Each structure stands twice: as structure tokens, then as C-alpha cells.
Length: 393
Image 1: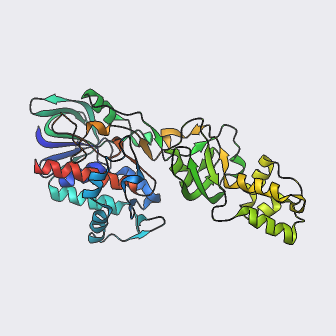
Image 2: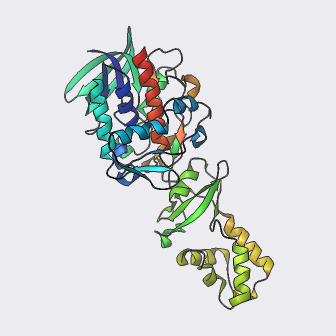
Image 3: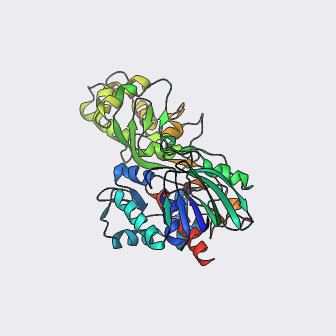
């Protein structure tokens, strides 16, 4: 069977690429349903983009690579698409946009676009082998008990990364890239909870508080932190995990926006006869304050503390440092950091240098967004770049 374009992966990037690649496209996926990661994202409401998308919100060996695709298909373009389709949405926080209803509305929109474009969707289809052909590419696929050979002028790899293997993630894109001599940067789990081998937070699992957190090599993120049986999670921790490396500390302001030193000194003057740990619970969740009181050795009444000692405590609370043992890994990571090297791709078409017709899009590329709709926007933008280039070829 010969087609113009074979797209591997029926996720956000693959479906959106098919919608723009023009007639003669076939999208294949091993899953029973398309868009599974779309379906579960955002608590089932799909955080489909962000109001404030810039290349600065992405991590890559080449921080400028994403600029071209993001500029030519912006968040406003996708917002307009969603609104025109009659899908109601709202901003939750920090520019994050969610469907008012279920994520299925986004999947249905993509499927309708694929159908209008005249593309075919093959689900429950295995990818056995991908190789060069005289006129482009040859893929050996398995549909049920049948083996099907498809020859395509264009091959688009949109199979994602290694994150959430229970949904079928395998890192196939990286293997295909290597088979064609396309370099792949080191990969690791990103947007993932931290673990601590000492179980220090297990006793206060479920406690959440607003913080500002930063890994040594990354920016500060003012979001929520959640204590879990395994360690620390919540948006602030997930964000910093993309910049964190084993053995490094995460620095956390436990009371952002509050001058703890001034607050404690004022309390000391007015009613300093209470234990420091008790007074600390006025600024932090009580059980979390108890944990800190034990870890930091906070004894005695506040009235007995010198101003210098209060200043030292405040500095430790505004710059509390923890060293995670590790992370929960690809099992719960929302995305994969690293991937197909941008040095080998065109930022305009996502086509591999020197290999006409071979495109890599979405999560498998070494462009990883922050939490908050950025990775979906990269899927839309990179897929649009590849799809429109194919349609015009």
C-alpha cells in the first residue's frame, strides 16, 4: 500500500499533523482509542494551552529552536480553533486554559479535523519495522493477525517519549531516530514527583501549601507543594524536577510573600509566651509546622528567642533546602526531558537534516515545556509546522 504521509502516533501531535498534512495521510497507533494522554490530562479537562507561551517556557539544548514553530502557530491560534468549535474553556491559574467540560471535546475536535482532511486512522496497529524505500519509507505494520506493508513519501514520528509506560510509551521515536542516524540527547523523566528514602513526609501525606521552589539550575516557581507517602509533589515540585539532578538540593520558600522574621518579632512583642512551633502553625499547616519543629529543633517559647535567632529561623524557612533521593521516574512523569536532537531538525518544518520527508514532532523532540499547557502547545505548533510543510511539498 502506498500513501503520501505515514504518521506514527495518534496523540495530540500526530492527530494535529494529520489534520494539516493534506490528503493521503494515514495515522497509526497501537492503542484502542486515540489521544489517551489528552483524555487524562488536566484531571480530565485537558490543559490545552497557556495564555503566556514563549520559548522561555521550554527546556532544550537549543533554547531558540522552538521559537519558529511557536511563532507560526500560537496559543491564540489554538484558542481560536477551540472557541470556534464551541468548546467552552476557562483560565484556572497562571494562564493555564482548561475545558469547562471533559477532555474528550478536544479529541473529538481533532478527529473531526482529521476526517475533514481525508486522513485515515488505524488503531490497534503495531509497528514492526521502519526502513528506507526507493521512494521514501517503508513500514511493516500489524493489524490484528495481518501484516501490512505501507510505503510513504513522508514519515512523521509522533510517538511521544517514555513517560507513563502503562499507556504504551516505549521510546520508539528514539530508536527510529538512531536507525536513521539522527542524534538523540539524553532523556530523563520530567514534571515528576520527588521521592525520599527516609519517608520523612509519609506521616503528613496530603498536606499542601503555597511555596516558591527552585532547583539549582532553574527558575523559581511560585505554586503549590504537596506532601505524599513517597515524598514531595504538587505543581511547584513537578516544575523544579525538570531542572533537578540527583544529589542536588531544591530550595523552597515556605512562606512566600510574608516576612516571617518581622511577623515573629511582632508576635514576640505582643504574645511571646507560646512555643515557637505553635506560633509557626499560624503561618504553615499545623502538621507541617510540627514536622519542621522537630527537624529544626525549635524548642522554647518565642519570648525566649533573640532577634538574631528569629532572623536565622526566618532565613531557613524562606530558604528551606531538601535533597530528594530521586523521582518516581517515567511511571508518573508527565513528559520526557531530552529526545531527538534539535541540531538535526529544521525548526521550520521539523524535517531531519539530509533525510527528505522524515519529520519528528511533539514530545519525542528535545523541547520540553513547563507544566501548564506548554507541552500541548508544543504538540500543536510542531505538528502544524510539519503538516503544513508536507501539504505544500
